[in-house]
Length: 370
Ligand SMILES: Nc1ncnc2c1ncn2[C@@H]1O[C@H](COP(=O)(O)OP(=O)(O)O)[C@@H](O)[C@H]1O
Ligand SMILES: [Mg+2]
Image 1 (cartoon, rainbow, N blue to C red):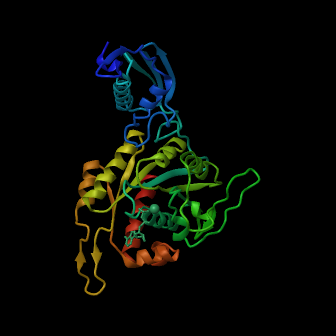
Image 2 (cartoon, protein in one colour; image 1 turned 30 degrees about the vertical axis):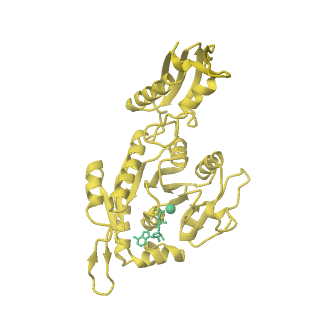
């Protein structure tokens, strides 16, 4: 018996005695708790809330855990098994811990983005606009890219998946309430020829949405599956920052054609962009390219260029990730103003340098994802 299995019992006076404690049975709760420490590689979410645990068997000190994972990447189950067994062996009373993993390929027809995600009927390509860091311009990029795609005669939808901090309603200047069909589907809001969905349409004021985890998952699923998107060439998803619940729900719910990662040239943003790229890589969603936002500033007075957040970061990172650098978008006052006014710059100013960059991304997507 190990010393820590004994309890020190304080007795009156100077005497203390070690009493032997009967070995405690390992409980299912202890096992589950330990497993919540195991993160799905690349994500900030654990394998329990992810629904990967299929069975737990405890026989004295022998613990067996059965997991089921849909992946094509052999590193994913290997990492999970290793992490889980290490944690299980750390539970007092566990002598043997074995994690068995039932690995199956993502279902056929899921296309890219495994994990059981399926295609959205009628939608050709779903593209996620993501970043590890907040405030780098995801919503601005998603909104302007959607408009640029629409101008190429494509049918385009834009889904604001930032449930906690929606901005698409503001950027498109509408707070119209969506209607429901008889089949209980939500009809997206039409604006400038685009179909839009955002939490901003459902909230009464600008107060941030206070939602619990399961509600966020449900809203995200509904925004994707319960909205009558109709026939679309592209559905652009504006993601919240990070690698958490919403991102995971998305890759589990719909098959993504790919992800565009937004970063600023600073090292702090690049580190987070790399995390986002890793997350998509782990679930076999291709990274279509990197967009460097706030790349530089041209002084309106004398035309001098200032690299406010440094330079070359996006290019280096794109090379490292072996993906194209799709655009370098300057810090531009008109772009910010247009967003605040409710009309993305691409729809407002055809001659803007920023519009040209978005047209370039749109053309690239038209060719690579026709
Ligand atoms: N290239 C840019 N030039 C000027 N302002 C920008 C640019 N990109 C984004 N912004 C502004 O920065 C703020 C944050 O951008 P947003 O798109 O909401 O970022 P995120 O969605 O990543 O949080 C917004 O006020 C937006 O108008
Ligand atoms: Mg945003």
